[in-house]
Length: 180
Image (cartoon, rainbow, N blue to C red):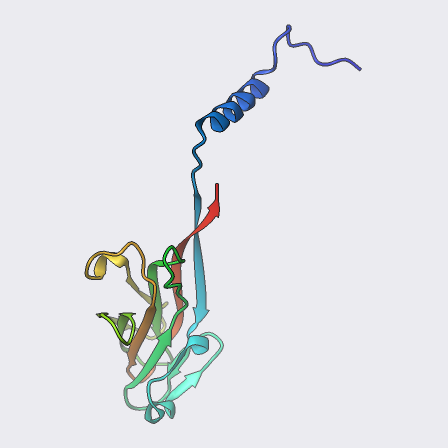
């Protein structure tokens, strides 16, 4: 079997591939490749009543954490992070809140970044949620933090749920270095 006729020349695709390999080997520079990743977690798995007194009104469902009581409740949520230098830091933290049953209401969440023995950043956002409508997203990004860090490394939330409101899920968006 003979090779296809190329008039004594290498096919263009082979030539381009060889050129790219030679140039990359000669330059010696390597570039890290990053991809955007998302961690979604149901609120009932990572949130809990802020104190024992709020536990009575909270209903943990597979798709949401719901305030089934008649008064406002507070819940705390701790998200995954990686505070190591060069660790996986978040570019965005998101909470999706909604209403259940026939009630509409307001959900207020305070984003917390930091640690117990150091500087702590608080950023509060609220959303009105309506019965029969899809949830509302509240997001926080590094530009909202003093000093404008590149990433968020220790994300946590404290949310106030009025009766009939819920947190459906929380999400963290981050870059992951997958090499060169």
